[in-house]
Image (cartoon, rainbow, N blue to C red; front, side):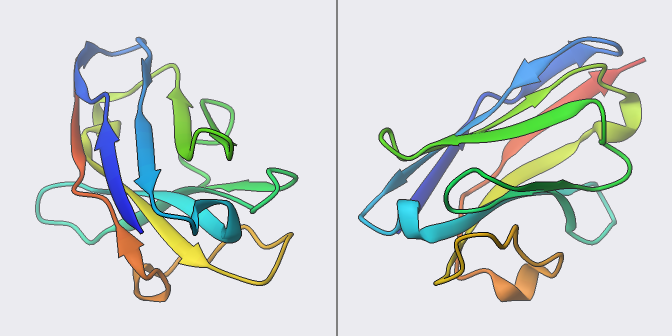
Length: 127
């Protein structure tokens, strides 16, 4: 599966952005989907994950209550709605897919567990 992320940009602190990740191929609906981010000089970190059937979601503590992950399996698209953005949210955001037989798992926090990655989209939050 190929993943194409978009929607990044420059936003002021307190603002909102909605990213999108469009998947080609037939494995999107059978994959756990997650967002990671990577700030300059730092390791790639888990942000949010969603199960195959959208029944379960998981978030990093740093974004709980501010970000919402969702997916539309009919459109092969993954979204995070990011609200109340902070300067520390500045990073390149990547979508990732982990084909899985589990219907309820929300995915690993380890980037090594994911088979497919999008190219990343830059989010910059100014103070």
